[in-house]
Image 1 (cartoon, rainbow, N blue to C red):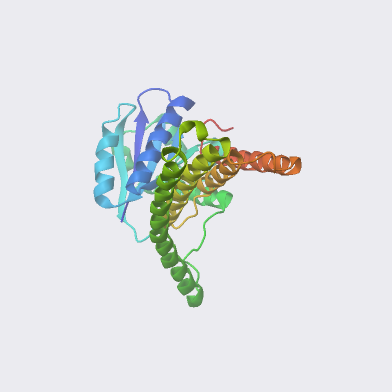
Image 2: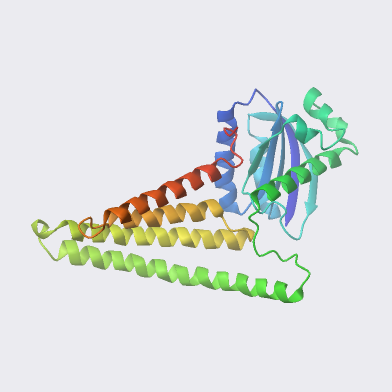
Length: 291
């Protein structure tokens, strides 16, 4: 596995919308290729670290070089790694402040005055220290890395490995569950729609079909959670919350308000508000629009 970092200069001032667009595209692309990393930005200068399979990173670097939003790209470091250091993020983001730069003496001039390609002799390690500092700070803030294999207790390490193999087995079983759920949707549509005249349909039958569709979607979301964990060994918290929202939404769709009491409806509303607020807070993580 390869880790690659580079620095480049923006060809124009980057607005928050520009940065949001960069992150949106990068996160979708990186998730598809199993690439992780972090992007730092300050005063028209980008510093980015990427990690993944070497052929994927080489192809991605060529795409990045052709991006007209920056120029003067200089590769700071290429190194082989045994495990990911930025597994928490398909593309983390930090808009650097003065306090962040103050943690790495000597790096301020690059962001204040810009840089020339020949100025990096012996100084590339400054950016490595900066990236490492930001990564450690953000990991402490997020604090959601699970099942680490860094524990010195051999028994704990073995148990963690057993759990990880169990997760892979769950992924296989979830595929069969999704296929079975799709078959169930086909059966429900046949039973409710095709075998009976349309005028015989009632609200309960239509809701049952909707519920069958929602079960498939929830199963797919759970499968994505499992596969993301297998790739990065980190629980994708935001996706878990989104899955929970979808599950609650399914319950609401199939509510029979003749049988469900007011307290049940009120409690469900509070649950949706709590999950929605949690998702909104998670969405703000590494979002350039956030304060």
